Each structure stands twice: as structure tokens, then as C-alpha cells.
Length: 505
Image (cartoon, rainbow, N blue to C red; front, side, top):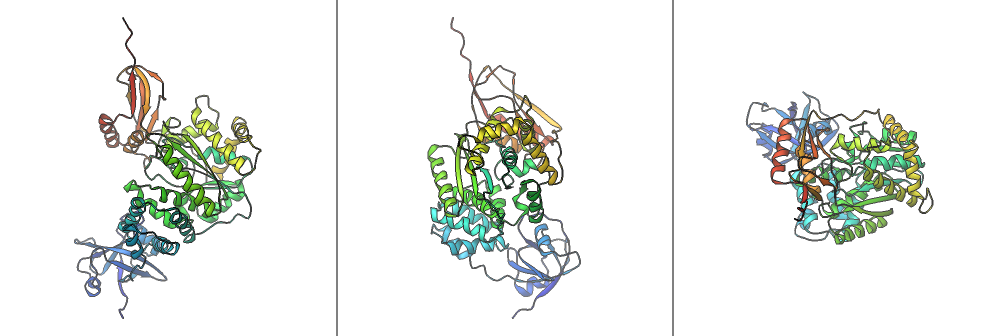
């Protein structure tokens, strides 16, 4: 039996996202005695805590041979301080990897197998490359209905599940793919005005220029633990909390972080991700927005039919009352694309600003109305009237601000220091807007990491424009990112103008 050998922790300050990485010197005596090399999985122990990590080997003087460095996530989860000893041994085999390999070859997984995989992922036993393999396998070998039901339940099972002692508990989600579609903060404020409990947890962007958590973080703190979340709900009935700061569906949080750079968002993972978070947060009644359009995430009626079928069947199987609402996905919603710009649009709607984006208000009112009706808070066909009154009277704004103050305060959105207007090159009619290209431009400008970056749209579909008229304004915090966006625009125009017909002679 091997004896635990220790190395002294020396901080390196290396961020590997969520992946636990241990850095060892190439002459480390433990490496030689234990047969540890680059990419070996090791078990690390400090005091009463232990984690699993992947070894990277350093061929420089960053570490001495009797020292160990850790990625920031590993250091945090192990709770180790500089100078403390860390015991290192080879990690035991991860049995669920055999189920992962089975899925890679197209076999179906049962509930027990999926729970085993989710448990090992949540406990940090999978390297990023193994998580990527699972994400890819679920996308390439389309999961059947039962697998999605079981995957959703497994994600909930390996995390915490909140109970609120009442029903209904409301929630709302958009499957994404439509820039600027930031209805969630408005819907939450309206629902809370109706007296509903709405523990809204939101994700950060995966493939988009902003997620709801990115947008709301511009105006209020969104990183709260469960105890703080409960206090906010107790005080105001609703919250805006980043799901990654909780342990409601920890395996999904890790899947999302790996899926983001891969830009993979399969139906199976999307449904399991969305619904597991709703179930874990204690929701009983959920409205799901599916925008449908040629450059949205869901492009066709057939795709929407399949996704709606999955959502409703998986939701029902896991005890949710769920309503799917299909919306127009032909063009962005609102004007802003990027965290601060989208936050500005939300505030304009709540403040009844004369220049507020009408399409954003209309969508939010429709979704809020559907949610109120699903929860039985209003009568049939009365939801939109209640939602409009809540905005017109200022009650929705007051509730939004009250939630923000309960979460730590409210801050007005700031503006990017660099702005560049992109203009029409000809007279004509705006015939189509490519959502994906606009989203890419906003991301190249720096969103969502740079909160004020993105773009401000100045035209809508079917607008008449003249040569030289501004189509949109790029916002950036760094000249290099602005240059990247402009270079992309040279060969990927996101707005298509049909030339005005020349007058007949």
C-alpha cells in the first residue's frame, strides 16, 4: 500500500476555469516514485479536504522540486494556503468513464449510468477533455426522450434542491439565439408585483454576447449563496441570482463552462440544463420562450416542434407545469446587444421611457402574462393587462429596484469608451438581419467579459435607409477588440439591404 507523500503549496495564480490542475516540477521526487507524469490524475489532500486534479509538469524554476502549484479553482476547493503541505497520490480509477465511452459509440445510457457520470463531473473527477467528450457525444448521438428525462433528474440529484413550502413557484426561461431578448428582468419584476414567488437563477453567456446574469450584474450583485438567496426571496419574493454561485445543478455548471468555447448546445443538453435548474430552484410553474427564425438558435418549425416536445415531456416527467411560447426570431429584440446595452434597454422599458424598445416591452408583457395565467394569479386572457398596468403604474420598476437593493444595491449602466458607427453603403430597405453575425460582432467587440462592449442597433426590419445612415454603433473597451470586430464586418455583413428600385424613365 502506497503512503501519502506531501509537497509544499506555492501559489502560481493560474486560472484554468473550473478544471483542477496540479503543477509539479519535472524533478519532483513524488513524480518519480509514484509514476506521475503530465495528464496523470492525482488525489490531493490538505487537512480534511481532498480533490482530484490533472497534473501539468513545469520545466522551469517556477517551482522547486518539493513544491506543488495549483490552479485557482483547485486552490479554492482544496482550501489550501501558501506553505501548507499537500498530500499527493494517484487517483483511483473513475468507473463512469466506461459509460462515457459507451455513449461515444452511440449506446443509450440509463438513469444509473447518467447519475454516475453527473456525480463524477460534479465532484471534479473529470478533466475538461472528458467533459468535452460527453458534451460532444450527447450532441452527435442524439439522446432519446428517456435519456433526456434521466439526465435532467440526474443533474438535480447530484446537487441541492430548494423547497419554498408553497405553490406555485414561478420561473421563466428563453432558449436563446436571439440577441437583445432580455425579457427576464421585466418578467420577474411583474411576477413579483403579482405576489408570486420567483427564485430566478440565471446563467452566463454560453455562445451569446450576454446571458441574463451578465446583464443583471451590470446593475446589481448577482453572486449570492443559498442563504443570501433565501433572504432576498423572503424580503421581496423574487431574485436575480447567478446559478453558478449556487450548488443547484453543479454538474450542469461544469458542462456549460466546457460547452461555451466549443459552441455546442445540443437539444438534450439544453433541455436537461434548463429544466434541472428550474427543478432544483424549486419551481413548479415555468414558461419557456422559443424564438424561431432563420438565424436564431431554433431555425425551423420542425426544430421548434422537436424542442417543444422534449421540454413538455421532460418537464411533465419531472413534475413541472410548463408552457412553451414561440416567438418571432427573425431579428434581434431591443437595440442593445451586450451586457450594459441590454441593461439600458430593460431600464428604459421599466421606466416607461418614450424611446424604450417597443418590441422588448411587448415580448416581456406577453411572457409575463402567460406566466401569470399559468400560475393562476389572474384569469384567462387577463395576464397581459396586469403586466401592462404594472409597467405603466411604475410598480414593476419599483419592485425591480427593491430586488436590486435587497441584493446589494443598484448601479446605472455605464457606456463604453470606444464607439464606432457602421453605416449603410447604399439606399434601400432592410430586408434581413443575421442574428448570428450580429452576436459574433458583439462578442468580438468584447462582450460579455467587457460589460460595456457590444453594439447598439439603429434600424429594424423593413426600415428604409439612405447611404451613409447609421445601421449600428459598435461599443468596445479596447481598440484591439474594436479592430477585430471591424475586420470581421468587412467579410461578414450582418444587415442586408435591398436596393431601392430606380425610377422608370
